[in-house]
Each structure stands twice: as C-alpha cells, then as structure tokens.
Length: 166
Length: 122
Image (cartoon, rainbow over all chains, first blue to last red; front, side, top):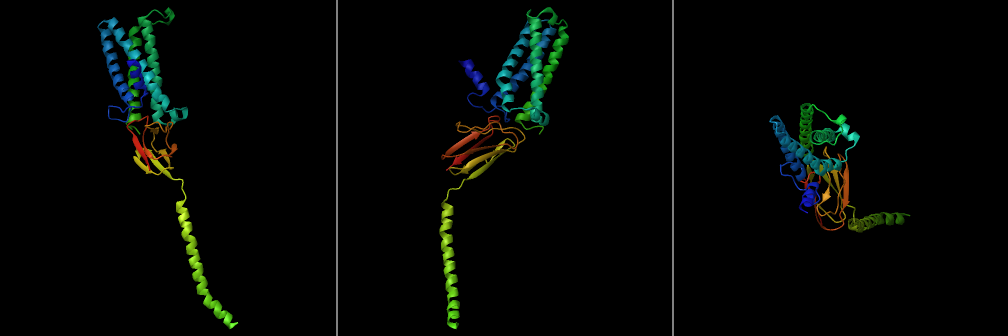
C-alpha cells in the first residue's frame, strides 16, 4: 500500500506537487534530477569497485542504478515527455522539444545498452554469439553514453523548468 | 396665404421642440433597455514567463475566460477543484471556460505547479 502511494505521488496521482529546488519544476522532476545525479555518482563509484577487483559489488551497484533508472523513466520521465505531446514538426523546430527528444533517444540507448551489459556480465541467458569479451571497452562506452544522457537531461530540466537557453 | 405662412412659422419651433422631446424620450428608455440586456462577457488571461497575468481575475457570472499561451513552452490550465482542465497548450494556443456559478476558482499549470492563478466570479 505504501509503495503504491509512493508511486502514485511520483506520477502525480494526487495532483502535481511543487518542487523543492526553487525552479518551476514539479516535485517528481526535482526528485528525478537529484536521483539521477546520485546515480551518476554511484556509477563512478561502481567503476572504482571494478578497478579494485571487487566485481560482485561492482555488478550489484551498476545493476541497481540501471533498475532504478528504469523506474524513473517509467514513473517520471516518460509521462512528462508524453504529456507535452511532441510531434516531428515540433522536435525539428523547437529547442524545448529537440533537447528532450535527444535526451530520450540517448537515455533509451543507454538503458538498453546497460541492460545488455548486465545480461552478458551477470547472467548466462544470452547465447555465446551475443556475448562480448572486452569488458572494459563496453563498460567505458556505457559510462560515456550515460554521461551524455546526464548532460542532456540537465539541459532538458533547465529549458523545461527554468527558462534557460530561451 | 399670409395667415397660413405665419401659422407655419410659429408652429416650426413647437414642432422642433416636440421632435426634440420625442427623440429624448425615445433615447431614454432605449438606453435603459440596452443596459438591462445581459451581455456575453469575456476576459483574457495571458500565460507568459511561467506566470498567469492577471494572477487574480474578477469576473461576473456568465463570463468566458480565455487563457492564451504567449510563452515559448507548453502550459496547461487546470482547476484545483477539477472543474476545468485544458490539454497542453503550446505557444499561441488558447483555452476557454465559461463560469456559470459564482465562486472562487483557483487553478494551476500541471506542467509547472508553481504557476497558479485564480478566477473570482461574482
């Protein structure tokens, strides 16, 4: 019951709540921004765990971030994006829609790429021909992609809720 | 003939005065009628720079309020009590609602909940 109430709050079931960062954003957008920054820090911390050969802790850390991000996409980011009814015409003509669309595309790619890495590195469900062996290269690429997603996400937040870059 | 002319000249001011009084009498009641007729009142609220202007709007019952988004980002107009709710309004798009009952109607933008306004209907 508590979980349902929490999810409902995030999705704005009880009406949108004002944010806490002093911008025009709703509560869930502010919460999402803070969580995304914490998740980015966790990913960097997780990469250091791998460097110290603590692979199990590294796997748990990175996979947790990935699952939490999936929740944030479903509960906050996708509903917000769908709400403003983006169209191709708007995406190609307005920075408001363009930045959010770039963020969405990069974000979906990063999430899928991350899930793929978790499946390869942490499970045996994928066949041999779908598995990679150069771990570092793939994981660094994912970290770089995630950084781009974070930057485009901050840009989206700024345009949508603070009026910057107008 | 001369007598007829004199009567006509003497009657002219009387006729003029009569016409003037008649005109005034006719204008008087018609003005009253015009002011008594209910008029379809309209009022506008501008949405710009993350705010509604005017923030509080006083109108009479039957007024149609039109919100126009002059901002370059989308907004909505949603009644706090769920009485009216617009779809997302992009730049230059409008939303109208006719207030048929007296009362206070607070509203906000669901995309930016910090944006609030109020319509007071008397």
